[in-house]
Length: 113
Image 1 (tube, rainbow, N blue to C red):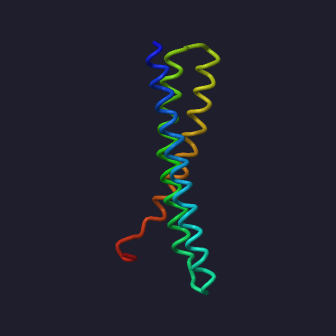
Image 2 (image 1 turned 90 degrees about the vertical axis):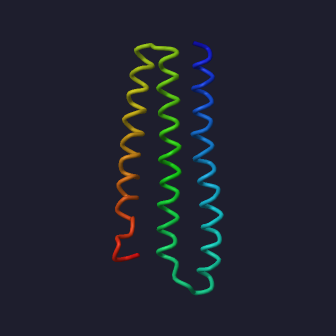
């Protein structure tokens, strides 16, 4: 059972790393876009693209964190732990659903491409 604890910890760290990596990349790209904006160029579409790319990183990171929580609860099953896991999974699933929905709505249609 101790090995599952370390697996859960590793998966959680991967999830956090994915989110941090996505934020770092998008922050760098946003700074470049803002410099472009100072040159009087419209960047609305590019900013929306960045926003949705960040959403993709958040979704992936949340999926890893949910997996880590599930494995962690298997290693130490208590009623309190199960209730906490249920709440976390519901909250993360709702967040994931709405981020995914927004990303889908943003995808350009074949007419826009």
